[in-house]
Image 1 (cartoon, helix red, strand yellow):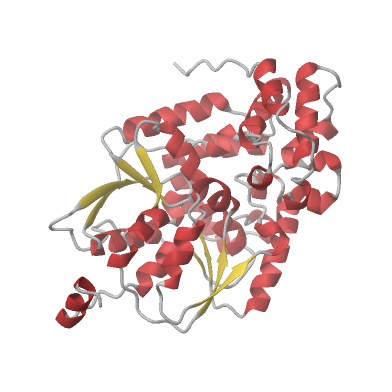
Image 2 (cartoon, rainbow, N blue to C red):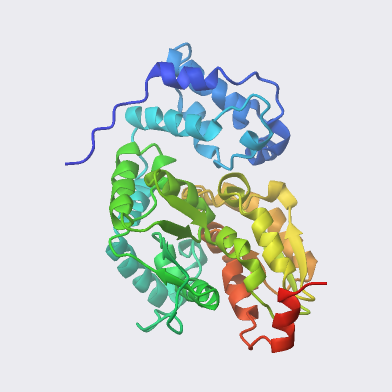
Length: 397
């Protein structure tokens, strides 16, 4: 039986909204306000709108609903808010109430249904891969999925592991991130970390929660909690999934894979590279997973590497979970400044730590778009460390 999720109370929503002091510091960092220059497209405006709807001081309208729909959930506003407004929590509550009173778009309903059913999603993506080249551009919202990889061990077995960790896979990442999972396994093997992938996992539920589908989000959280019940540590690759996976298992450790690697970075050695790469820092990595400093330190360990960080257009690509599929025009508007900066950077490839951002950005450029873990594994130096070097490390001057 599905969980019974009571509707968010007016009191809880208003209490969160009343923390906003209407100072406006969120406006300069909000991508949607920057695009439209409308108060209703700002965090401050949306908070006032949700509060007024909850108190029934104004009527709901399709125009008002559209303003709430347009929010990307980037949480840039939270990062600068002096009053500590928990905007992400408020947005989920507001959209949950919104969902109760209006008809859901068919496209959104289909996305949520498929994301919650991994086998169906895998079959559909296999069909999409076969048809990709023949489809008109309007029917190719995602890059072509990679060829399925043959079953087999990811890397050389860890004979004497010093640590173990479980890996969260996710929904669409199951088909698109096989090489990234293998890359992480290679990096972990070099650290003598045994990486396992428990069965029975589900979508993290973030896209459902942010669409107001609280019941489905809770069902998916329960499945993941059961799948990882015996795992003392779970690693996440997609920054957008990290928060939801962490919340699904509040009494156990969940860590961004990049943070995990960085904490053991002194045991990783990388080959020199004279390449210039572009780095996109997803909103969820900056404002939720918090692994940006870790990633910068890891890339700094690659001798000779030149990194150009993409910051144009608030740094947000506009993917926003399902919005690149439900609002493609607006999503393209948010993506365009980043693609222009990428083209002008002279970079040979682009790194981004979130699967949704990589799919959206990858559909707009011919350059390879990779997870940073893929790049780090490629640069991994597996040559034995000379004895004199080991001695020098053990006995610094």
